[in-house]
Length: 554
Image (cartoon, rainbow, N blue to C red; front, side):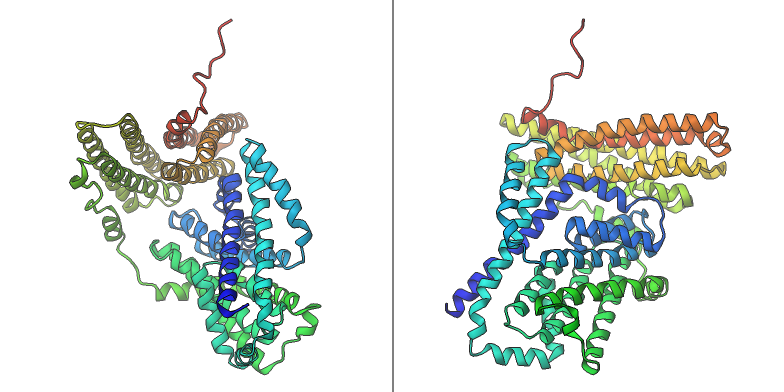
């Protein structure tokens, strides 16, 4: 096999590996995405508990990067403290190391079983959870196939005349190996895939284990850089989390790399073969980093925060809300382009509503008047966006529209109306309740506060799902959104029941804050229902809705 064919096979296997990892993550997110998000944004916990949760989420998603982006998003809304968020990220890195451990074993015999069972579950069942379980199994099978393809593609390299020279160079020039692995990991945006490929190179004898160790450390540093890049547009509080994690991982990787130059690494004691040694060293590095860094999160985070300049929140919001180019009047005579422009404007409007909803629970705790005033200002932007979108779509309707385009215009108008109503609920109802709570110096009970924070986390998760449904028109996600609406209605009833139980028991805090608690629950449920409404037109088009929920009269 010539060099070109080797590179072609290796590139194809690498793409399959990246796709497979993404396939598994997609299955997990669709099956239990809201539950994962609620787990991340749950009640305040200790650092160790947060690290364990981060580990579990990364194991499920097979990606510390995906976990980092989720955590940063919650941090932006004030749902996660910086210290707890960094602990989650450190745990997520250890979780992906455990994923590598599992995939490092010879599981070739499982491939036909995974494909057969996964294909049967995905193709023959309609239940969402079952279909996504099938997707996950197929993804794991593809990962194993991709690893086998990588091994086959690299086999000829063992006899290549230039590989010994490259191997010697990487073994001695540890800086080049470290930087090359960091850049490669960042480019492919997957530390799991990078580490698995390093294991294949070492396991096939293409590279010595010493070079693989330098590459491994570089991959760990490069993996932390991915989350920093993906969250670069987030606010300062959110960006501090992946930046702090990057500092920990880079300093740790460089320190271990330098130490390995002076103190020999006992590779023979790390496993029975080179590939196993790399996998075990990867887990050992991440677990050791977790143990050493948990107590240091506070000081390092404060140091990193000094390096990141403060931002003008108003300026950042104004930049995001700039109306230029959102509703393009130049394309209004072309319905499809005009509707695409209206869709972008509606998504922008949804982003503003999401920005308003994020800090609600934090404001219940702090009562920050400036941020409450900012929410009211954002509501004015939502109202203006609603009016602009409505008039723009009405102008499109003056031309000749196909029935499909006309239906899309009605759906976008309905979504804009729902978003405007959701904005009003946040700016008038919830902000009013926050002001009343701090004016009267009321406190929620511990159980009541936990119920409210859990419901808020569910609403924020469902809001994200609703925006995804608008973009993708995915039927499975639309069904899940309706399921979440029913669950929220059930949670509202259960919360009312538990609240009444607390009133009967004479809990003073519950008695004093009763109206606030009940109104907050109702407002959160209404916002969730407004966002879930985006699912109905999609489900109706695909014949997935009943005409009525009523039974026939007896």
